[in-house]
Image (tube, rainbow, N blue to C red; front, side):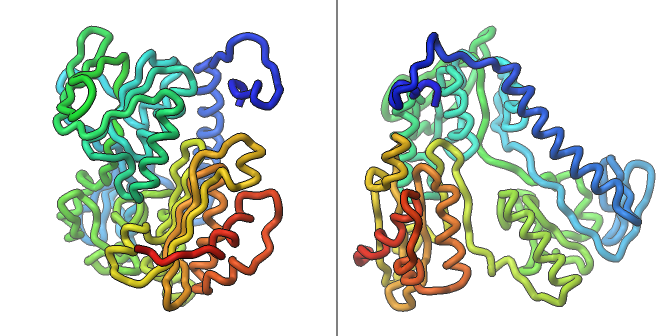
Length: 395
């Protein structure tokens, strides 16, 4: 915003600079406050004891934590996940965790992985002042989203000077002193990229490989995700798996919802299920992407009759006033039931706006509920009723 000040008639003298040590100090304070709050809360719970040690199963209902053997009728596995990395012998690299400890500005940050972690860090460090190159093996970024969303995100990042290299079919890297060279086999562009630092952002792996699951008889798939049913129970009675390690979601909000499902079933006689959950997430670049439900491609593949609405952010008064008109919003509706199947809002406020659509989806109400609603002006949400008033058959 400081760099764009002149667009609004705000003149700032001299170049905009970033003090990375202060950036990290602020981040550390926020993380410490959160971690200490949760830690102190747990340790002060009545009848609770916290073991800060490596826990491993020794049987279906026994876990060893350090030197102590614990036994319980109910065990909940909630071990999270860690960064998945390629084997790059002799090459120094960063992950999403170690990247948070950086208190300097990389001259040229190379990122392997064109999805959420890679794109978010890529834009952050480009805005801080680094040269940034993002490499992905696929033909487009965020392949789980629709092609028009992927293309728009690519254009947003490239407009800020982020270099994006797609279809990198064979990726290898070598350390040359303080420099790292990543060799590519790409259809376009040079065959290698040299930078000062490398971030691996190719996904996450569950922390289940050293839990002794085999001694408990708990089943997991080839990737290490623990198998669970619709109420998050494993194949072993009295053992549940929640959070990133069960493969049912890789977000903080899905992990918390896992807890809510288990607690409702155990204590409230409320049969909540994972299948009741509607997929939703955000890509926190600027402008952000808010997603809910099915993609346009998924609806087409399902073969159902549907209607599509789409509007450019250039038609949103709030976006125009803020000078942030990149992106668009779109929504897909079932032609017969009138229920909303999915939506994407890529643009200013998109990560918040998506929830007005998501809540109606949970209510299983027809799209006309939003279409006939009166939204405040000037907001991003006010264009949703307009978009819903101009639906066309999905081809």
